[in-house]
Length: 291
Ligand SMILES: NC(=O)C1=CN([C@@H]2O[C@H](COP(=O)(O)OP(=O)(O)OC[C@H]3O[C@@H](n4cnc5c(N)ncnc54)[C@H](OP(=O)(O)O)[C@@H]3O)[C@@H](O)[C@H]2O)C=CC1
Ligand SMILES: Nc1nc(=O)c2c([nH]1)NC[C@@H]1CN(c3ccc(C(=O)N[C@@H](CCC(=O)O)C(=O)O)cc3)C=[N+]21
Image (cartoon, rainbow, N blue to C red; front, side, top):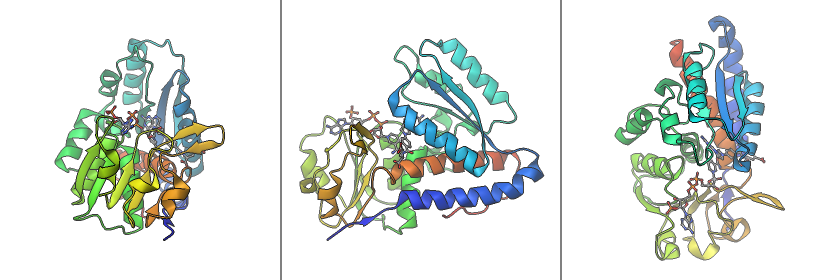
């Protein structure tokens, strides 16, 4: 068996095309384009690729970028003040704080300074609570992007065994909740899980969101499973995921590549979340952006 590639790059490009077309029509009527503020503190390399992709994509679809890079020594108070300014700024529909922040900053406290209706990363308690309840709200871009990709390929989830490796508040936990909401039976695995391979071999849907190259080997994958690689690892040869791509491709039924899989969907979902927030602010009737 050779797994079919879940092509996040193409789907993301199509979504962006739909956003661009819609915004070209709507922005002149509203009198302004949507705005997205990204706050990047320090120079964490994990953030560099994302910030670059995001700015390029915003320009492409007609979303104005705000914010920028701030020195690592920026204080908690200065950042809170900046967020409050963006909260009040009529031109800004989305605010994203790049994680991780330098260790001396309290990231949870800062995230809660963002007004929930501009929280396009879905990390404010209000949006996390809505996710837990199954109510509509802004959802974390990577988990929402993964669900959109699986939905596009009509991958059945109800009644399936899903194993999510990784339990971060940004990716693993919300993705597990979304899979659960789609009626999968969800197990979370993490650094303290004994016999990871024994667990992952039971998964019909296997998600790896860890950040460790080569973590998921072919022996850990059930034949015919759907494998989603969220990991981003920088190597001399370029970006790679957590999954042994070539090996697992011979075992799985569907597989996401890195790059060109989940990362591309994350960026597209961020733009969608920003446009959703813009649409709600102006009470616009939103089309279904299906890609
Ligand atoms: N493609 C995309 O769009 C995105 C990609 N990423 C990438 O995804 C990866 C995960 O990101 P994020 O969730 O923020 O990372 P975190 O570092 O916050 O979380 C990593 C998780 O992996 C678990 N873990 C670590 N080592 C092992 C192991 N040996 N076996 C099983 N579980 C393990 C940790 O367990 P424990 O909780 O016990 O410590 C933790 O839950 C990173 O590579 C990141 O760069 C992130 C966001 C978006
Ligand atoms: N508050 C916050 N929210 C995040 O969602 C967040 C974050 N902080 N911190 C860093 C991680 C990492 N992340 C990526 C998203 C897209 C790509 C991406 O576009 N990847 C492309 C390739 C990029 C390239 O080639 O350089 C791809 O996989 O195809 C990468 C990484 C979001 N993160």
